[in-house]
Amino acid sequence: ETGVSVDHVPPHAGGDGLQSASADFDFGTGDFSLFGWIYWTSGGNEDILRHRPAGAWGTEPGWVLDGGNYANAMRFETGCGIEDDAGNSVNIPSRVSAGFGLNTWGFIGITVDRTADQMIFWGNNVARSTLDISSLTGSVTSTSDFIWQQAACYIDAWGVWNRLITSD
Image (cartoon, rainbow, N blue to C red; front, side):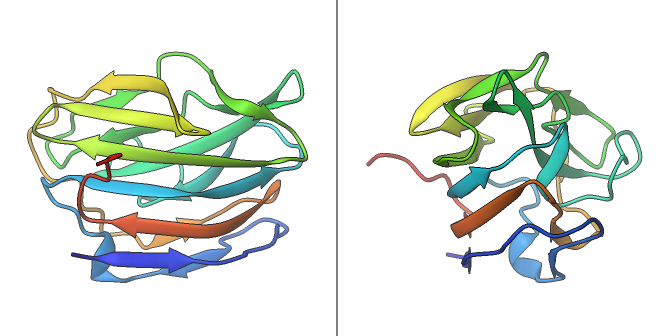
């Protein structure tokens, strides 16, 4: 089992924040999960975590966890999604609340279950959006580094696993 953790990364001013070329993030056609704490301070639509080049939909497999501010609450943006190496992709169809306001800590994450064909976005332990990923037939492993790229939040105590994390 792969487990990678990230602890207390402060906001930064543009560019790539935390970056890793670890093979621990190469999930292929398997399940994966990532969870952690986030303190959203402001900002518009920005990547939180990604394993693909910025703005590369349609050109490379990978996934993105994207956040934004709407009505003083943290939300998952329409840039959230996943793409395989066959060019199949699925994105959140509309903005979804993460269930907590700005300038507070919230617990968010993603679970990807390739057997059940679901990608679930979690906010404060509630499933906020479930995507049907049955169109994904190939690998989601990106040739890009795993990157935290965010100027509008703090992150703390993040974990990334190459398996499905459940309440069991």
